[in-house]
Image 1 (cartoon, rainbow, N blue to C red):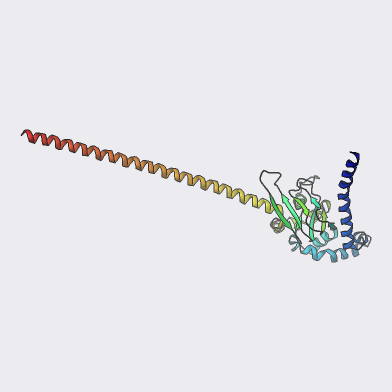
Image 2 (cartoon, one colour):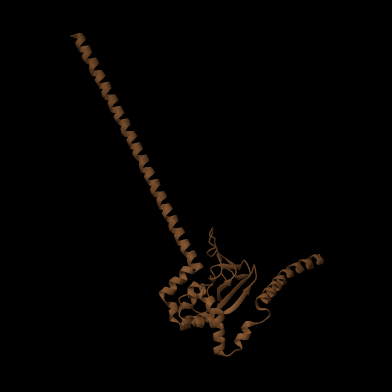
Length: 269
């Protein structure tokens, strides 16, 4: 019994260590053992800004949300981005957990899934790839001046389908950028954000589905009402035909009786 329990523990422990090993291998392949971020942070501020701009600007511009931003805002974002690596099957965030970073994908594919808070029968799945982003709940939080210190909850579960290379913008850094650059509060930026946001796309899909269900329900009720009216008209028509039939039959009987009476009178004459 003890040997079996020990074997189970060994098997369970092997899985996380296997993931650690895969992550170390992937990180080594990407960095060749050089901690680029530590190296950059040790440089003078102006040189650090130039290097960050050189490394990140072209990649940040590929994200549609930032494509039309001015240079100062892009520099501020680049300066605060942190490189992130994820191995296959790594969960970036789970639905309902606090969102502490926005992730801008440079390479790889991720699965983004939502059940809309566990709503019965609801399921939405999308694939994120190069140029996409996740954690957009954090941007809504950062742009709200009344938002407190509590981080927003994730509306989706995001999981790496392949090895993923990305840049992360942490919550406090995003809050600082949003407070310093009012450009982020413009309607054009808000529109762009909503267009590319998986969360807003899901809400839009839910709204369209709900509107379609209401339309179908209304049309079904209208068709049913028309069928009932047609059925009543048919019944009324049938009743009218029946009444006319009995009236004609009564007239025929009356005429026959009149002819008989006339015949009897003629005979007696």
